Length: 297
Image 1: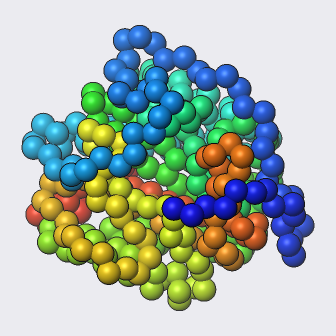
Image 2: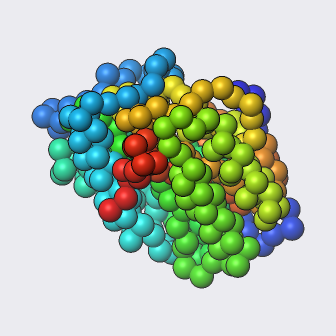
């Protein structure tokens, strides 16, 4: 993955202020009785594990439970989005509700990630670290929630409007969600994974949006990230969907450049030209009749 590492100075042709790092609060504690994933206290990224996440009936029920909790947490986080709230306050609320439900916030400690949720504002493509920056009227913010419940991860994200948002941003967010929904609709046993990328890329092209290529969907279940790697752009990848398999689809669309720039924190990724980016994500289960979206209320 080639990701440039520098900070842009301004957003061209826009009144919007460039996103800048805020102050990051200390890591929030997790009670001892909460089951933690193996990486929780390691600073090393576990990477993508080999082999698909295919489940028996018990595993499917556990995936449904973790997916449902992730969806409920995301829905609650979305209700907090308004001008003046900090992304750190959103992180605090997400952390608390996950812990209160007997689960672990999967991002916390993953490869050293310092927070319990990812919050990606405006030109941030993904992996934004919650901090002291207040959300401003007109912002968009993606909130990416993953919970680890009874040994299984449920992973979902959505992009929310902060106050009065310009039509340009509203359309980007709407089309990104449509890309996810359309991609899910073509999933079924035996379908080639590359049809996901073709479906998303075709719709993005219709609206002249870019599709970010460096960040992908993934198998999810007993581990946070496993095979297969889900590409959201046109590709010739091999591999077909399996019955009772779980994975995420999480397209990231941009108004301008699709080239990512990584901040010095080695997590926050923003568009090269400062243009807006939006993302939506669901965890899905391949069923006999198609696909079941596990991360919805």
